[in-house]
Amino acid sequence: METYYKNMQNQIDYRNGANIFTNHPIESELLFGRGRAYGVELLLRKKVGRLTGWVSYTLSKTELKIDGINDNRWYNARQDRTHDIAVVGVYEIDKKWSFSADWVFYTGDAVTFPNGKYQVNGDVYFYYTNRNAYRMPNYHRLDFSFTHQLKKTKRFSSELVFGVYNAYGRKNAYQIDFREGKNDPNITEAVESSLFSFVPSISYNFKF
Image 1: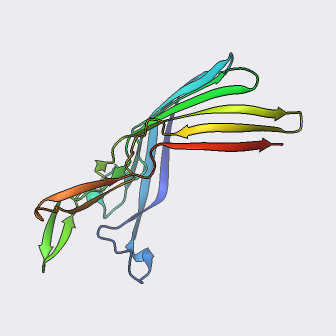
Image 2: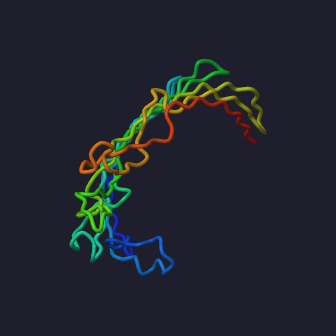
Image 3: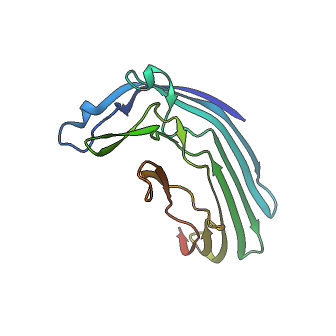
């Protein structure tokens, strides 16, 4: 079990309403301040026997305080994650084959979503309030693999690995976009997109 507390200086974030798509210097859109990160980490590990592995859990908080953002109050940093869990197991079937699986879960990243919208000359603009006050959906997935030892000497070893990434096909959100409703422009729709679901793989490893 470990606990930590860290003070950070010279932290950087975009000012409210920053325009990063023009040709003027990006430095004019940045603000500087301080940050802090603190939490507790727990780890339980099994090192001996045919079944080895570990379980880890982290409870943490990462915040920023930058004048000009969030009414000069502390707010969630983009990388803030309240909970982070990992469960890893490796089972030695015989001298040639082993099976491993790992499951991860963590709190969705802190993000800034619009609180409302308004129109100016027929164009729709979104209205934002507190910085990083919302969360992406929680992330979790299961990976597993079978490893076949091909050859092993004192100088080198080689192996084949047959694996599956995201075994139960969880569609974790990569980003969420907002758009006008197709049937009613007064309604705003949140559209979630993801990158990968179920991905099988075969790899060859050579170590020397």
